[in-house]
Structure formats: C-alpha cells, structure tokens
Length: 325
Image (cartoon, rainbow, N blue to C red; front, side, top):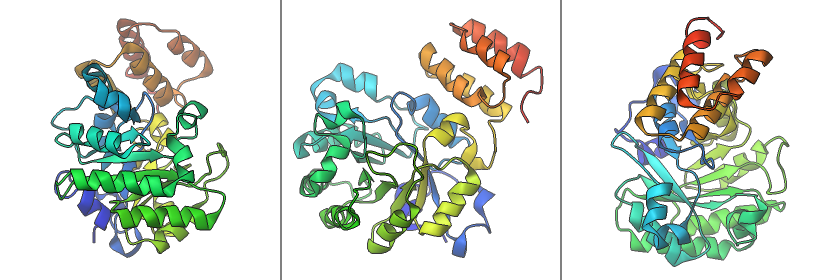
C-alpha cells in the first residue's frame, strides 16, 4: 500500500523503485524527498536524484518578494523542463499576498509550493523569514490559507517546512494551526533553529506525526538508505527528506552506500545539458567524490578551474581506474 503522501505528490507520474519492497512496515512506502538546498538543488541536481529513486525534489529557497517583482529574478531562480516533476518550489515569505502571488507564477510548472519556516540563517531571520516565522503561527496559517484560496487547482499542494521550537506544545500548536488552514503536508527538521550538528529529535517528529491528520516528512541527519527506512519506521512519517546525504551521494535513496561511477557520469551529462555554471558543477563533484578519492587526488581535483580540465581528470582517474568501492 502506497502512502497518502505518495499519491498526493507522485501519483502515476514516476515509477517507484522496487528497492523498498518487503522492507517497510506494513507495506507502506516512504516518499523519498530531495531537500531544498541553497545553490545546490537546481534543475540538473533535481534531475540527477530522480534517476536514483528520489520521488520528489525541492528547489532552493527563493525570496517571494523578489520573485514576483522581477522577471529576471524569475528566470534566474527557477528553471524547469518536462522531466522535472514532481517538483516543490520553496519560497521565503512573511506576507500572504507575496507568497500566493509567487505560487501563482509557478503553479503551471510544479506540483506545489512550500513556505520556508525553518531556515536558521541570521540574514534570513532578521528579515522576518525562515525560522523567525515560528514565533507567529497565526501568520503561517494565514499565508497557507491565502495561497489555498487563490490557487484553485485541486491537486496543487501548499506545504510548510519547519524546525522545532524549544517548547513542544508550541511546536504542535503551530502545526495544528497550519493543518486547520489547509496545509497539504508538513516537513519537520528535527532540530531547533539554534541547533546545527546535534542529533535530530525523531521522538518529537513521531509526536507531531501522531498528532496530525496531514502527511508528515522527517528531515534531519538522514544520510543513508538504511537510515531513511529506520527513521520512517520509528516515526511513522509518510516521507523522509535528505540534504547533505544526497550531496555526498545522490544515489543514496537507491541503496548505494557511496556515489557510483554511473551517477558521476549522469551528473556530467545533466550539468552540461542544462548549462550548469562551472563553480556549481565542480562543487557538486567535490561532494560526490570526497569519500572516493585520496587526499592527494582531492587536492588536485579541487584545484581544477574549467570544464575541460574536469573532463580530462575524470576520464583519466575515475573512469579508467576503479577508485569507487
């Protein structure tokens, strides 16, 4: 039996991999979600993780007020293609009209929009975005409800991504208010805005899941396929989201313990097909190859500064020699 979240976001658009068959509790399949990551979750990376069992991919966080004000911003911040589905476009906003207008701009090209209520960066919070919204759950609910009213597509999702508040009851109340406002699902990063490397609080995610009727996605410190399944089983959530785990191994959700060579080749192809800027192309490869190269190899590779140099290095050192386990 597929989860309600799977039906809501994926449906018949993408064939689910068989890797979770007979593993997940009661036959339910957790939805595998690629997290919103500044710079990194652009179109080529979204296309890459879909090749390796990611069901849904988020865009990087986009500032709604800039997005609706500038066509140049819209062209730079959100690019897509026919195979880029299902995609959730994430916006930073604290104004219902800005968020809903931005949602209307992208509603023809994505499965849904998400309100960032979890970014802990100070430059984001001082503008009243991200985790700062956790202090005003009524505003969160108003933003969700306004988008719901303005977009009539029945299968279009409006979701939120939150971090935890130190007070459990306040966290639960914020989630319940969003649920009453019509939120489609909630992604919960199991840390407070002040926490960085501390273990994610899966007990709190489990409590949130058991307290709501809408689907919940667990996020935080998920760095392997096995851990994805364990977290889903323990918390009862409908989906699991990974960020850093996928940066280092975009094939993680397909069960690979390190980045396979074919995944590297797929990244090269997709990055060149979609015009990925070199700095981003190179940085993604540094993440993907970090655990597979020696210290000396990493030093050499990190110093490469153009596409031809990277192609030559990969041809001579990656695809010729079996450096991958």
